[in-house]
Amino acid sequence: MSYTAPLKDMMFAIRHLAGIENIAQLPGFEDAGADTAQAVLEESARLNEGVIAPLNWEGDRQPSFLKDGKVTTTPGFQEAYRQYTQGGWQGLQHPADWGGQGLPKTIGAACVEMLNSANMSFALCPLLTDGAIEALLTAGSDSLKSTYLPRLVSGEWTGTMNLTEPQAGSDLSLVRTRAEPQADGSYRIFGTKIYITYGEHDLADNIVHLVLARVQGAPEGVKGISLFVCPKFLVNADGSLGQRNDVHCVSIEHKMGIKASPTAVLQYGDGIAGSVADQGGAGAVAYLVGEENRGLEYMFIMMNAARYAVGVQGIAISERAYQKAVVYAKDRVQSRPVDGSLPGSAAIIHHPDVRRMLMTMRAVTEGCRAMAAVAAAAYDAGHHHPDAAARRENQAFYEFLVPLVKGYSTEMSLEVTSLGVQVHGGMGFIEETGAAQYYRDAKILTIYEGTTAIQANDLVGRKTARDGGASARAIAGQVAATEAALLANGSAAALAVHRKLSAARLAFLDAVDFIVANTRAKPNAAFAGSVPYLMLAGNLVAGWQMARALLAAQQALAQGEDPAFMQAKVDTARFYAEHILSRAPGVRDAIVEGADSVTALALEAF
Ligand SMILES: Cc1cc2nc3c(=O)[nH]c(=O)nc-3n(C[C@H](O)[C@H](O)[C@H](O)COP(=O)(O)OP(=O)(O)OC[C@H]3O[C@@H](n4cnc5c(N)ncnc54)[C@H](O)[C@@H]3O)c2cc1C
Image (tube, rainbow, N blue to C red):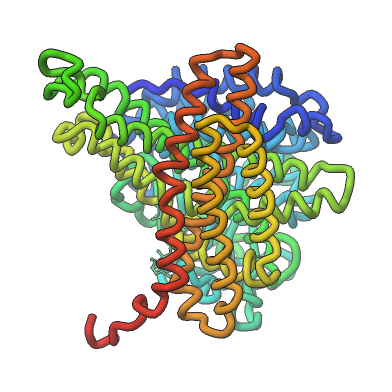
């Protein structure tokens, strides 16, 4: 159950699709060219393959557990976390001003993928810390930044995101946790947060909770929610750790997957003995981030980063499942090949259907990776480009892609990890094999950081209908330019991809028209197709990147560069077009022609 980082494919995406040499032209990224990317990725691969991946199976067998208010993580996690932080990996993408390395997301995203392939449960701790760092960078005061950022960026302390409550999941307007202002400018927090990833653990000395709560008298709904920092241990003026805060873990969940990642119920302001509650009244001491009642707005900025990262988790788990399935398919001997190419039973990889499964796993993983790499490059340009108009354009493109990276990559990771089980036959269903763990682990990805439906609502409402479909059609225009390049290329593979890409683009444009026409006029019709629309858009963008990959690979082939890898890229891109992109017209029909049957059945008939 080893893991080998797909460095060649990552570098291909970074170089040929994301355009790392253009990123290296941007102010602040001068040293971040292809050589840097290669060196960083190799170093990341060493840690993830050698130290973190071997703990993945162990985490499933020996999950984190809670005893006497303390969470103990899987054996080996503490040492792995020490090596992760000592290597400076937590700060890879964060600003040098706060101790980070300030590398572009284009490089950082590949390292995030490796960490998650190696061990998704482990990776969640750094992922949530990244979220807390983003929140503080977005809206934290100078004092909050200087108190918390250096230690979060180094990984000495970890972060959490506390949004969910028993009655407030997808709908955060229902958040009830309350914050009471204090005379000294701080607040006291009271309430219960559920499902808090790494809400309690033994990997670091302090845990910095980012908490959504309502200040007394705040307006109802989303306009009355504020964001707070609430550390597990208060921080003294000299930076040392002070009193235990009145926030504690009352239980951790028993889960279907990512078992090693502790998912905590946190109680704020319950009067825990020995904490601040013993002095100066009850409540967990907290500090406002930014302004009152703007919490959700800040959270949305950081949620884009977290949603992108969850999409990368989908790619990561798909890659791991694919690698395992390939090894098994080469080893398991069963049945004579249908073409009679071997006299007796052969390794199952000789059967066309097994090849179809492996190719689906491979093509989807590469397509989603390519989409994520291009989105990361847009993010980098959106933040670092010297020209304001170029920054705006790139940021808009990135924001359109975030729900696709999150929604499409994670939904497809379920198909990929399910195929991973299928390739193993009965052995796939047996836990000892390990394929089932990837399938179970993948399921959470379509749920947390906003379910797929919530991503689709974002895509339909904010990203498509709001500008009358302009961003969506602009992307279709870029796809059409790639189609023209495929035609000009003229090879059989390019022409085959051209046909499918063109059909998928037209299907997408029909869906865009339908969504724009109906979001206000017939919302049930538009939203009946919201998730299919997300899947269609994700499929198109991933397929478009695979088409670009085909063109780049053919060019490299013509120059004699790495023929085996480049030919495999051409073959995989063609497979993507013929087997995955070809689903697009059917999805278009479901959206445009099938909306009514979604809601036709009377409620009483269910
Ligand atoms: C393992 C794990 C870790 C988590 N980590 C964290 C964490 O660190 N911090 C945190 O704050 N939360 C965390 N969560 C919570 C997670 O983000 C929520 O579970 C998720 O947002 C869904 O909310 P819910 O469970 O209340 O489901 P609900 O909101 O009740 O959704 C149920 C179903 O209804 C659908 N639905 C709801 N509203 C709509 C709508 N408007 N349109 C269409 N469909 C809709 C959903 O798509 C879903 O299919 C975690 C959850 C789990 C299981």
